[in-house]
Image 1: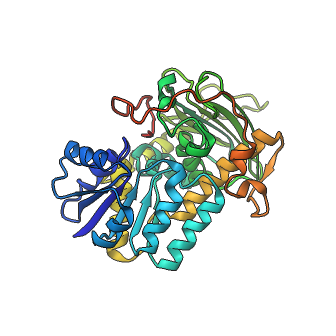
Image 2: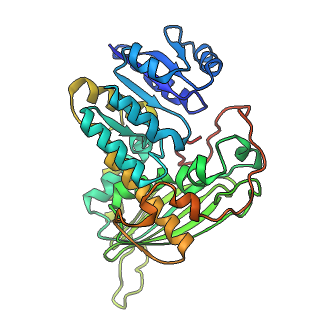
Length: 389
């Protein structure tokens, strides 16, 4: 029975607790840490974690609670420090997205995992969704042909009070805006399905949140060998209609699910009726997808529990988390500096280092509120949405 702790008891901690509780024969939550002990106690009571102890001293918890695994569910700027302390204490770690605000911090976390011999996994729970797994299986089959164009809409909507929470809305504490903290889900999915691009060109703005320093909208173009992908990252889209649309040479496939296959007539124009045979083959492949036993956070946490138990690497490790942060970093560098950025980023690049983004990023507006907590639950909208805080 693995002993589990949760570090940080804000809203997303509940998703981790609910996921662990789906594996009652494999793990037990025994510790909750927060800098405000009363908050950890309140979260323990809300979640009915009667066997868990609330802690306000992290080093004491790591030394005394006999933990096998911790979830880190704290603000992004604290991820590196907390993960490294846990790994150095000999505890396996799964850390919420984003892995860290800088590549330098990501590499420090990876090094700590390698030195300790412990597991480091970064939350990318949307790889554990039947719809996204189906889309990847179809793309991997090659039925759609070589990819030519991808449209990713990471469309969210957040009202002004969202950025009143103390750690949101500044480059220093949140690490960025919607690109880092919302679209990183879709960026990770793009990397998972297509691999890393060669070049990134992007623009950033704050279109609707005058109480936050950070961007609430960005548009990026990713250049592959021959394909292009356009990524819209947003918290200004009413209705949160999210989508991933992939156009291959032979067919278009997308989530929400749609298949269209055009067929050329003798003069190159599309033939009436398209290619129903290919569409049927793709639909049949999609229908053959074996449903995942657990989805979302539960799917990933189940994989991490199995990895700890079996002594293997997790499906999503620190290197995968780093690749998503690298892509976000390239988007920010391109948008701030006004130029195309080549990947991979070199450690000599100023944006690799911790602090460069804080010093160079534009302050679109001044953050005007700093609430310790916000009322209500996390609400998830849209038809193909990942869960995010």
